[in-house]
Image (cartoon, rainbow, N blue to C red; front, side, top):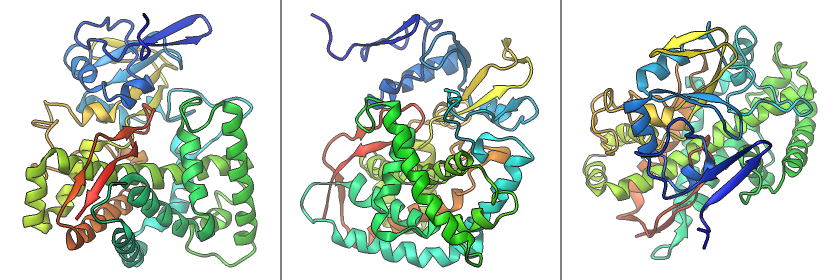
Length: 422
């Protein structure tokens, strides 16, 4: 009888098999595709990366759903590629599949200088220190209200009640988006990153339709803001910015998706990941309760341990030799941050969650160089405030069962985490 968990995916001339019980230490590395979403949904990927770091740190996958690609799995190699903008390009995509010719979504994170630099500079004031100082009391008030409203002594989904709602409210503020429609932002974020047939969208056609709804909605906001004096929100910044005010519609949509996903998925999964991690390592919870000054370290360790975006792609601009392997011009290269953050040669005892870790900010999750996460300080601030407010209110935040994880090798996240508070 066939194993119901054994999946075959047909892609033109290739057949890709996934077995949740596959032995990571005996599987044939010549055919290993580490990018399968099932590995991340089932959380079976870590030993595969451990083996790649030991045996094949620059690994070539000849056949995958998205074609051939290289995997870079060690910390220092990832940093070297991430900062080598002369030989590795962010264009045409930061994920393993290329943009569809009839539905391109250019965005500044998938651009090289100079266009990347001027577009990034247009929106960066939203996370400048003076603006973050204005946002902090707003985040604190909202976090406190959400935490006060959760049921005591009853199991609820932390992802939906706290992580999604807090980050969605923050996104609505950054865009000055109609408050009553804010959950549309959550939906569009999920649609943009979901694999068809995995519970979010059924087909690519449905994805396109919903993303066009996003564009139409934001077009109305664009025209409204463009006709008004400049304001400190993202739509006003884009509609008045010299380098962005004449963007084509699909480039506008691409940058919207970048800002929505960047401001939503990453922070919400770090908030959930922190609760899950502190339940797996209760000694760390006792430490932070005894000394709340450790919260900033808790934030950094969470972002390393969770690694909310598992990888970023680059494309080789010329032939590059790395560890004796020849990466050829035009080859796809995946920088697996989720593996580099577990590199035993750089981060001691990397699988342990340790908020007193030396050099706790030394992680790959924000990337390096010109593409380092533009909103990293805002994300850290939200996570810090959440924990400051949790410690004021709850004696315990107890995880009642294993989380349900996202089917994605890009967004490393959660859809459900059952929790009780007291």
